[in-house]
Length: 390
Ligand SMILES: *Cc1c(COP(=O)(O)O)cnc(C)c1O
Image 1 (cartoon, helix red, strand yellow):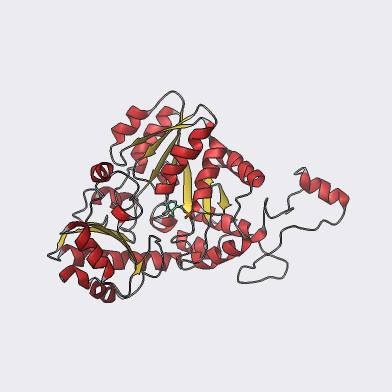
Image 2 (cartoon, rainbow, N blue to C red; image 1 turned 90 degrees about the vertical axis):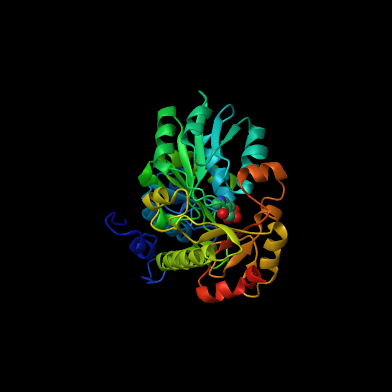
């Protein structure tokens, strides 16, 4: 068991007990779909849960268990359930905790596929979702119905970096008999630990910063043993479990998560500060800047501003596309949380399917650019934004 007194970066390197008999120092990868029993009686005891142990990798796998124990220790959670992707983590959370007739209150500033999941998939099974402001706590309170079971948010939000007050929204959830789930993908437990702020569930897309090098997909749901029972039950039966290979990649990545998050944050702060001084930049959105409308709240619940910087160029879409098209180093891709800096135009990509009016209301203007700041030298990232001054 991990010692609760250790810091998250220490747990990221040491937590987890799933070791083999060989005494390996670096975590082993168990590429096996099933496990062998000594005899029929042992098989029977494993299947009915009388004897702990592995049966089949859709149920448990030692490498995946090691990942789950490590992330649970870092988030301060009783249990972690690893999934094939971030989206399957959110699906497993819904399938495990909700039933037909339940109601969800969700931030309107969440990942596009998550909006889709609530609006088009979960809805088919009789669960309705009301979307509210990420920042106005009163809207959460006002949206509560007698059948509200789940609150769902993401902070900082994408791409506007709005900050939701986790403690305040958790208090409303508690009072309403609902569970609060926080998608902690942008911060990771190194920068923000939602359970310590009163949330009940933490969701991760490990695909982003936890891998950190853009290689594999994975996700996780974390919370109390009681809340994870149905989530794990869904996963074991339905099957979107994490591959042991991916779990091994994540384990190795987690050991450097702290130094990567610190470096992403330092680069992002330097870039945001530089962007703020550029004449063709209308505004910069970065929680680590004192000019951010929720800077104080961000610095209370996060250790740093994180790695995502959004900014608006003067001249609308044409100017934004010019900046993007003049880059040579930056990757034009919607992915984030990579050592490689990525640049994207939300209005014409991730948010293209929303009506222009709804986009404008949400603040996703045509001049908005989002940068997921990587680990290159900041001066090289700045120079690659040459289109700003052309
Ligand atoms: C990418 C992402 C997801 C989905 O994760 P996948 O691993 O791509 O399924 C969910 N939430 C946030 C905030 C994300 O950025």
